[in-house]
Length: 451
Image (spheres, rainbow, N blue to C red):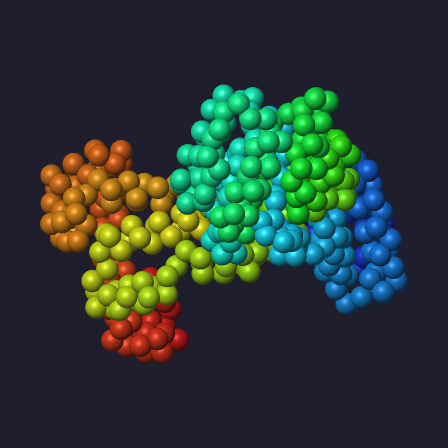
């Protein structure tokens, strides 16, 4: 997300920081480029105008133009305005103050991803907030919509209200709230039918469900790929239903990000959640400061650390270190490491959270570095037998040809992977003997230069 915007702004700010002093004309020129970059990213025109005017008002001040590092000062002003545009503070799902079971009404257009987002939210509340959640499908119109939520509930390990055909949406909502209270659930998620924002009948039904359930949260699920139309949808739903927040889906597939930048400013409703993938754990709270940092190429190290803490188990990591120091690192261990990288968003996901990502990505593109390498390595390991994974020394020429054929790679790819594991074993075994300081003093050919 925001790849194109981040790249354009990175070029603008790089030019600013190279200047020793800034004139008013320099700032105006940079802000023209910022304006174009925001419009190309599909940000709403009124939002762009307000943003550029607010930045210019502060950026042409005497303190900035004559400061020691005026370019950095302008970047700081832009960063602050971006955070403000995105909502300022992180907006949590407001269920703590509500009497259990707290109802969360999920609304949105047809095909925006409501049912999947409902299941993702149910899992998120169960895992991250330790809440007992009940999900209920109020979609009586789409074929198999209720059955879909049941399947997703099983995958997410979240309770789902039993299906009783013939009931209307309001009756199902009342039954869900009653079941939630009787069975001791903390939260009830109400997945409504998809509708067009011009559909008066369905909008009236949604309002009736809202009145019957008295939700603590009314979340609009909006597809980031719809761009400016998502902002119009949010405005229509807010006017008719009264939204308390937005869950933006398919954020990982939107390189522009204009919907996210416009929604808070246009509707006044905070973006509370973003969907960053298809799997049920691919949902995150929306942090305006972290998103602004990513846009400006400063990375998001906080989220990177949080993802690492979620995916890496301390005991398993310590076991792997002890094993590696003895030179016993094998293909099973490498496969486990590749899986952890994938859980953290893959190489591109990790790069997106590192500072200087724009410049790094450009350098990687110029170097023709293949970011799909991890997938090929995983395929090679999957094509090995359990015995071969534990003991790579068994791999002779015929076995390598079989593995290359099974993984869709070449024998050279297999040899490179084997060499990589061998080098890792040598390095870690030596590290275990020398300790960190000894290793740094001695140096390692091709890896760590001697001091």
